[in-house]
Image 1 (cartoon, rainbow, N blue to C red):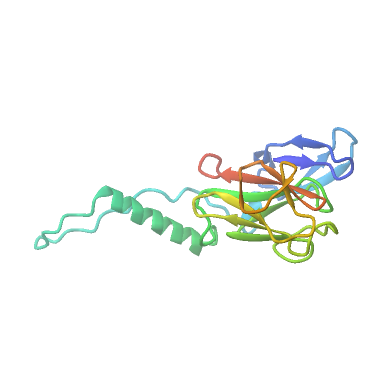
Image 2: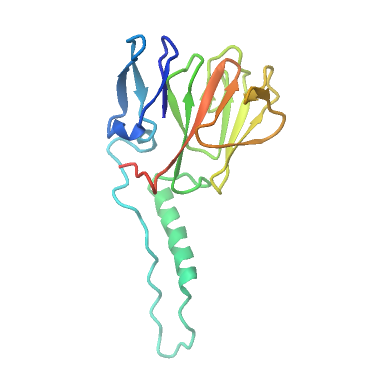
Length: 209
């Protein structure tokens, strides 16, 4: 993840796995020695003290066959599909996954500049509105429109951003976007005076605990 000093705007890399189980970590800027705090972008997905202790994987066993039933058991691919659907329903029921969100991925938005700089917000819904004072991600930035941009997380894990007819536009690579544009992990975009970085974490390759 990228950490930005709110005092001098110095940016530096930090491995978010070093948070451990801490919800907040204190940093000291190596450039200006300013001390500030950053929220753990991974633990905010879970209620206090609640973690996923082990992966819920493996196919469900086929149903027992009756001696009078000539129907063969379902093939292995169908069993895997059932197991995956069952696993997702268990995660949703446990509050560890939101319906419609791609499994195995954690999406976060890091504020790199603007009034909310040095903070990270987890994206836990398929659609997220970024706005000055309305929506899911509040910038409190006077140069950001009230409802500025829309982030959409698709089931295949792709993330798309579109401008919501904002006054100052949504900027990507220094250019104003005119339609939905796909974002990749660690890609930056700007709404008003607030710059963000999209962070995508694969919990299969990098477990949360």
